[in-house]
Image 1 (cartoon, rainbow, N blue to C red):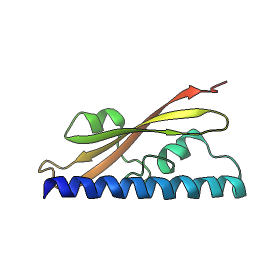
Image 2 (spheres, rainbow, N blue to C red; image 1 turned 30 degrees about the vertical axis):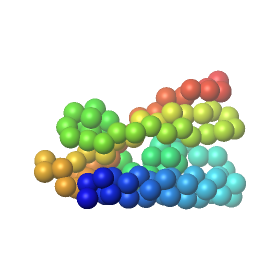
Image 3 (cartoon, rainbow, N blue to C red; image 1 turned 135 degrees about the vertical axis):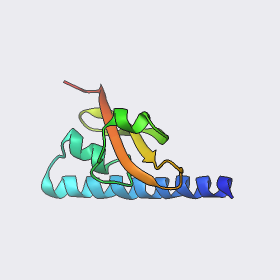
Length: 107
């Protein structure tokens, strides 16, 4: 059961990340370029809590789930560290956090 639940979460994240990236690309074309902070909230992390509601240090200092993703192809490229914090029983997420680093075309 746990393995199946993990697979479902993983599939959900891939689907939502793809939809989020496509939506952000469309919004960027219509409204202009997003800022790095906006991209951290919407682009590739697909967080449970948007905007993030805790610090990255707070998230990783307790039971959590972390992953990385990369955002950007034209102009700066950012690597995001994404984190979701569990409650004490590890049955639900209670917070989300991100931090990012520019890894290419940072000029």
